[in-house]
Length: 143
Image 1 (cartoon, rainbow, N blue to C red):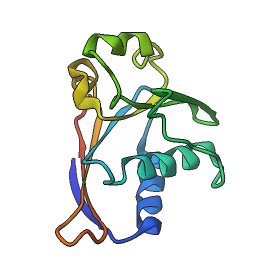
Image 2: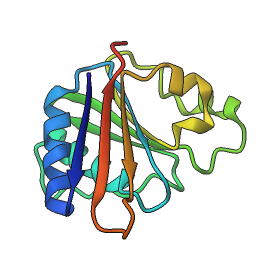
Image 3: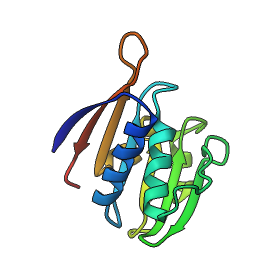
């Protein structure tokens, strides 16, 4: 499955997050790709809030914690940001692949070939020329 969508604003990003949350199943690993400021964390936040059925849930960026866990009605959700990962081998210590029933969202997964290879979904976010909105490309890898 490959789909493209233009996200003109935060509401469109939240709507896409809600749609993705409805499609995600236990064991899914979703990669969020894009440059700094492309909206990876905003989309992850929307997905997590939908999975938790809590539109006001505090969902901080996991940039410094590296992994932020959430207990939701749909099960455990892990939100990871590998930007600060020093060495790809360090990803084992994060336990992202330890729970086969967790839904895992990963930003900057290109820093770990192991995580990239395990992806079941990839969302590429691109800032279009002029900087207005975002272009999202969704791919389901079938894993």
